[in-house]
Length: 274
View 1 (cartoon, rainbow, N blue to C red):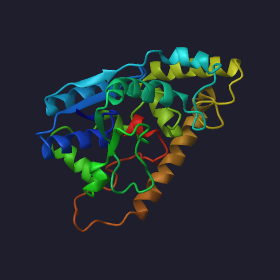
View 2 (view 1 turned 90 degrees about the vertical axis):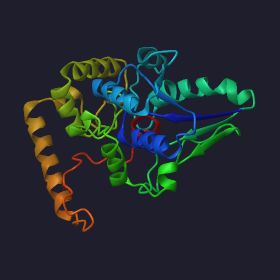
View 3 (view 1 turned 180 degrees about the vertical axis):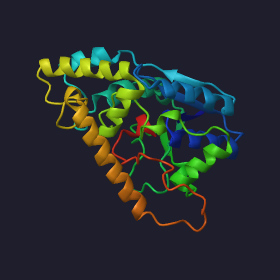
């Protein structure tokens, strides 16, 4: 017995991989899945529906057996952080492993298709923890980079998730990998989610958590008008520098230099934001 599974994060890379596999291997019975923490951006759900329309197949939602609040208590009310990524482990990896474990233990071979691009040599796929689990990297194998991903989505009529207007990654509304400008934008785009993140942070700090969502400052401090103005000014300076360093692409003379305003730094959790 074989199973072929492809994780959809709500981001562009995994969506492009699903499009590619649908076009290249229509004979393959692929199971699409999305690990839903319950704290995702509204734009993610809208994009999943759009992608399902193209694929002509459902994207199965894998829900954790315990929610974010449960695991926050289990971790002594300490917020997740780049050093302690318990949210990825408990809300993303655990549901996936629970989903495939019965078939692995029954002797089935499961092929997991992971969206790592050819221009990401530093990234690795999900480590196979079972001899019957095989990780496949079709984007890398076919030399598809970030621009190729965008081309795939545009040609398929799927397009990009709407949150790319103001954010670089999918995943939870309060992902700690967000840049400070993205926290500012979350405050404007989804003020209720920003307030929820502030409540989690306040509770965590009251219980002795050494971490805040944003590095070295609380969301209350980040939301101060003068601080917001400083963050926006510094972000614009970085954007101007990036544009000045970019070389024109002779093969794409009409390509917009600011097609993606928020560069993904590659630090985030693969299973979340790819």
